[in-house]
Image 1: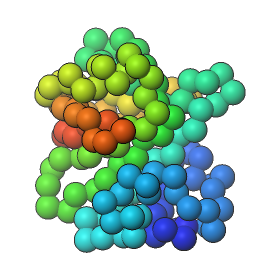
Image 2: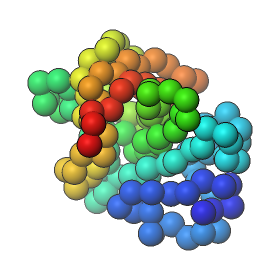
Image 3: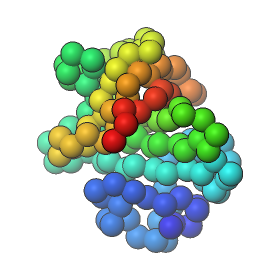
Length: 137
């Protein structure tokens, strides 16, 4: 856990020191302090090739990449909410027009971080928020 109360998860979580603040917390409604719904962050910084977190549509076509993806837990809902920060122009255009469509979010290593059965996207300030139902594991 870092100083903001967020618990970094994912392949690069061990790279973060406990004293670091989470950059995604600038997007948290509660300023990064844990709440009843909880907040998990999946941090995927750009790697040397500059690929970052990738997004694939329902036909498995690459739609673009983002520098950071953070997941919000919702205790009383089946919806999963993802905040997308630093999306390239093509990805941003794709996500804001996403309407109950299948989407896969991949880490920079090509492993699937999230596979949505259906998802919809919208603009949330300077970022993009995607919400939907995940495929069962």
